[in-house]
Image 1 (cartoon, helix red, strand yellow):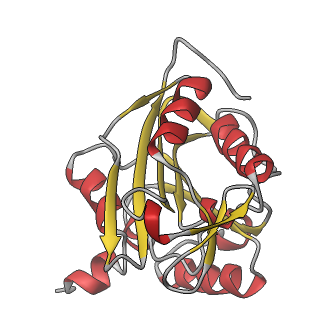
Image 2 (cartoon, rainbow, N blue to C red):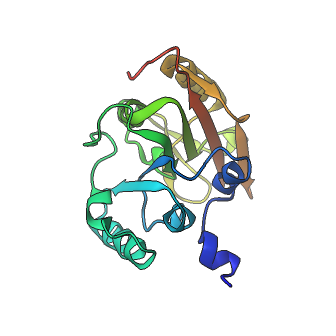
Length: 209
């Protein structure tokens, strides 16, 4: 019998929550946009999901292809590709779920953030789910240093593109999305804050840009 780590890998606990709530169902077509080594799709690769991933790291893509092959995917080479989130090769409305975990806070500026979001939204089907975890200023506003273009120095010594609640709400409305979950933020010892942004793409309002 497999243990929990063998079954679920190092999946983000908030993405695991979406599994528990039944929003991620076998048969769905899933894109991990910025998949890294595949920690968030370890479970999906073992089940009846149509899983794809992209990343800008060649080493990460090789790692996730190896993982996929080990878990039985015979077409891992075509499913996991070296691509930029800002310019993906997939057709419009291709995926039931788009995952963006620890990717958006590497945006260079607001234009780069917008380009990544618009592209992920483009490939998401109407009524599909967008799931993101990203760094935010929520809860540590007095502890961060503004470097311009929404990039901030954090108490942990890193520099990140940070969103806040107002920006997330405005972007959600602009895209034509509906919150599936309240905005949830975890404060890690006042060194950084990570926010969960989980949306449904409204089928009646299709906005890809």
